[in-house]
Length: 284
Image 1 (cartoon, rainbow, N blue to C red):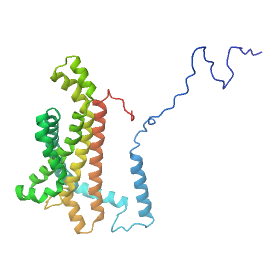
Image 2: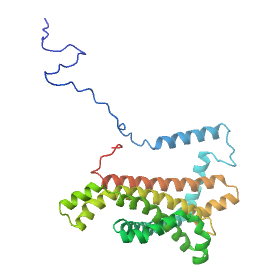
Image 3: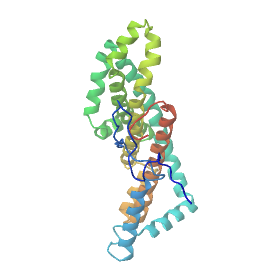
Image 4: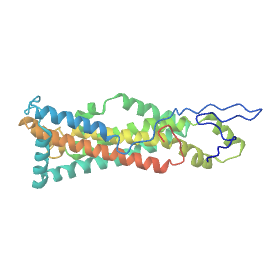
């Protein structure tokens, strides 16, 4: 014989609320759902599937858009011949040098303009003026000044990275909550400690955003500058392929740009999460 306690609530019944207390409604989750591993690759997989289906069904002209398997075969041939590795090494050296110098210059200018009224007056106007001038519009002037060697390519990548990094970093530095400034003044915090403990941590999200944009912009600039009187690099390989009507080689170069660009962005995202582990955001 089974005995059912009279004190147990019936199935499906709501728990009783003690006298003097108000029942709290069920909390509705408004944030983003739990992150799915490798979810960002879903769109890429769907794009590749549509591309493959179009090529297999004959809907795409192979002279204008080669099939994915043709691109893979061409890339493997270029890789085994050593041409692709040499080309990638040259382009990586250019973009790495330009980005490194751009990060140093952009960060230094943002700190000078963001932490000083005098620095802001001297630096911000010049940087904003440069931002209004397209970087690629400086190609003729850079060639006139520096020639057609590596120097003008690295300088243009550096300028693009520095300006792109400067804008969000400077905005983050000058956008620190005024209440934090007043609280630090009340606590008698020195200016050095205020900058080290409040301003710098508070501006790191803007810095990492600028870093991601700067790296992405540098790859875009690299594509163009390597197609201007270049003798090597991915841009030169694409230009030669265009002249000979080799769509598969062009797609191989674009795939390399995309892979390295995505890898750089993912690496910066991982670094950002590590450095800003104390921050709780909607995406967490």
